[in-house]
Image (cartoon, rainbow, N blue to C red; front, side, top):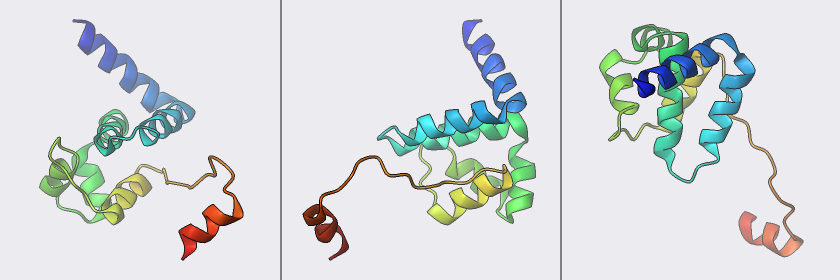
Length: 109
């Protein structure tokens, strides 16, 4: 099947190439749909580890990790950060455009 070939190839790349995993995660972060990020995190977990191992290393319940990464999942930011840290990853902010002084002032008020 093409889907299993795709997943198998994706998991192989995610497991063996840390830069690929970072690019995959960053691409997911650029999507407006937060579910895309959760799917990417789940793919990285399945490629590099297991839900059980991630749950154990984060102190989260295994069922909770499954739920938070499901289609209906709505995890807290702290739990996403815990999972990413367990994978050896982190989120970082980057400037995407330069704000004018007026735009910056409006944001910090």
